[in-house]
Length: 162
Figure 1 (spheres, rainbow, N blue to C red):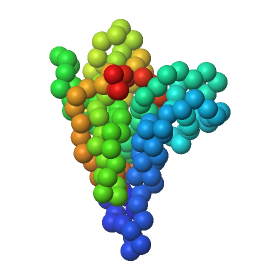
Figure 2: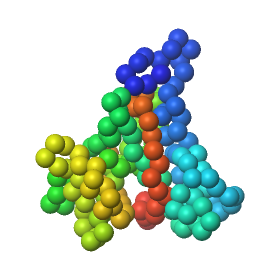
Figure 3: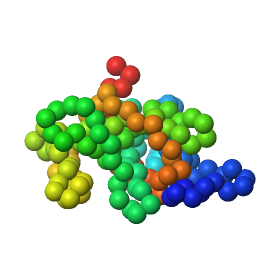
Figure 4: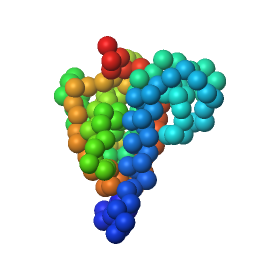
C-alpha cells in the first residue's frame, strides 16, 4: 500500500511502484511513434520534452515524495557543491517493488551544478533556477512502497547508452 503501510494480504504493490516500473519499460522500449499526453505513462520516451515535437531522450526524470509530502533526496559524488539531488532515473526494478535509481545532478541556468541545499534542508525555491540534468555515477536502491507520490519532470538525453 505504500507510505509506510504494509502490503495488503493479496500482495498488491503501490502505485508508485507501478509508475516507476512503467517508466523503466518506457525507457527500455523507446520508439518513434504515437502522440502523447504529458504524464508519467506517456509514450514514447521524449514525450515530456514537448508532446508536439519529440527530442531524442533516454531518461524520464522524476522525483519521489515521502509520507509527509517532502521530496526524497539522495547524495551523489561530484562537484564542489553539497551534492544532494531530488532527481532520479530508474535503472532497474526487481523483487516486486525494489528499484535501483541513478541520482541526477541538477544543472542551473549558468550551466553549473545547482546547489539545492539551504539552511533548513532542501531549498525548493532553488528549483526555479533548474535548467537541466547531468547523470552521476551514484545509484541508490530503494523500496518503492515507502513513497506516496511520483512526479515526472522531463524526458532528457543523458547519453546513458554511449
